[in-house]
Image (cartoon, rainbow, N blue to C red; front, top):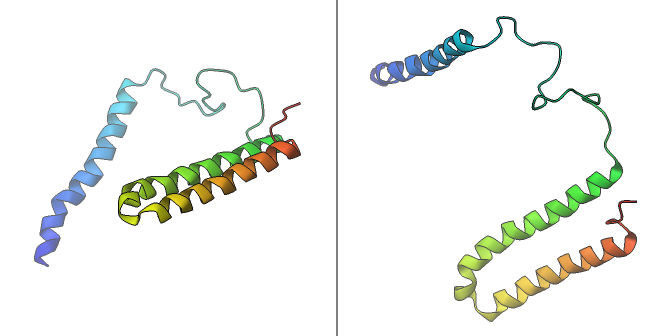
Length: 116
């Protein structure tokens, strides 16, 4: 029960800060009525519906980005331990990169990167 009284001021701060920020925001806002009719799009008028569909090519680009993003995720820890692991680690990383390059060559051959 003693630890409850220690956490009580923290709970007070956790409640007071958001309420205080909300109060300050309501005092300094420009218009008194909140904007509820249109989403904020960096000040630009909305040109399409929020649930409009994207072209299927965007998904291929997203998958390609994720593949190279995962490459960087695996390369960072490899860089940290390559000195301890020796030449075997270097060979394994080049095999990993070869698989990624083969995937890019295959995607290029299949026309994934053509936008027309």
